[in-house]
Image 1 (cartoon, rainbow, N blue to C red):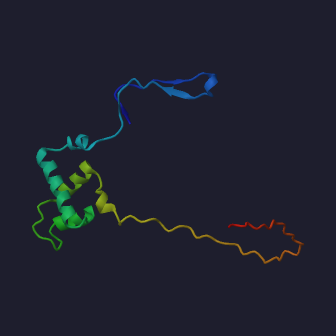
Image 2: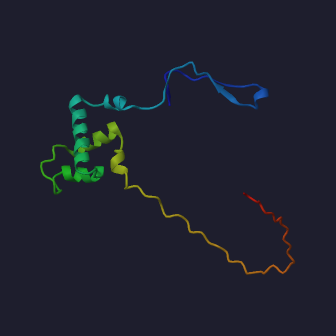
Length: 139
């Protein structure tokens, strides 16, 4: 969160349990947007970043590292019109590609559950059952 002016924080009185209040009359910026991050680059750099994402989509969403290897000329794909810098620029402007992350993230191994075995103890106490028996006659 970014505030353009200093924030005024005041503690409320005793009736509020010592809670704090913030004066929200100032303008806040809550998140960086793509347009904010794209301002750091030239129009040509932004177009090359978009081209890098397009190539990533056409190749079936390889990771940025794998795409950088392909762009470096060491891969099976020839004449890739983007460089590793274009791929890094696309990562900076647009963030990680959601489609490239799908299926590649995995959950860590969970802790095993240990069940303690209890000795079988038959219930030798006398048990009684109480119930009602009724019949409904339908014509």
